[in-house]
Length: 201
Image 1 (spheres, rainbow, N blue to C red):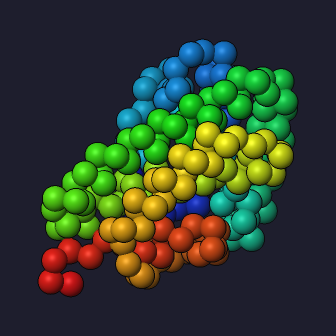
Image 2 (cartoon, one colour):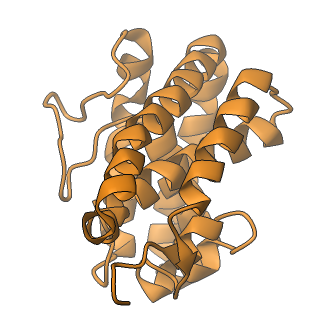
Image 3 (spheres, helix red, strand yellow):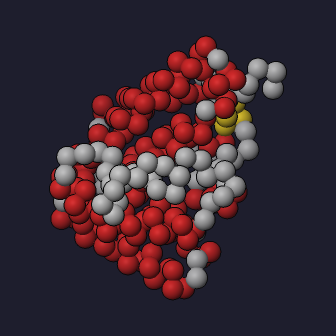
């Protein structure tokens, strides 16, 4: 999924609320990439349910809340409060799924690195899904840091993946919709201000 130029605060809020409604049952289950509303959601406007997907929407909506009407801000506050309740009730399960998600998403980036090593044109064309993966992982890392949760294993893995990623990208404009830029400071989300360069560019 790429936000391109089509990001919508209202869609984001609707997705967050749907995820929060399904969060408790998701945490009770064993799957990592969960479902919302009784069906598996696989793309487009129907993202899968994971801790990272929830945290990403919740944090950026909070950063951009002044762009929401007052009644939508109240909906956001309700979603944030409900998330906190569920998170506290299922703390161990939530942490376990966060850690699994970090490993899953970073491992999935290996295919992209192999592609970049052999075909920079395809590398540049297929960068957007990797931006999503790495950004979702960062939301989890920020949440872990805010709760003083440390993992040397995850730290080592992130450094390894970032080192490989930096080898294929160079400075670029912000790669998602400009209205999202305030939610993603460059120091913490550097890959969103970089992109692979296709041959000849």
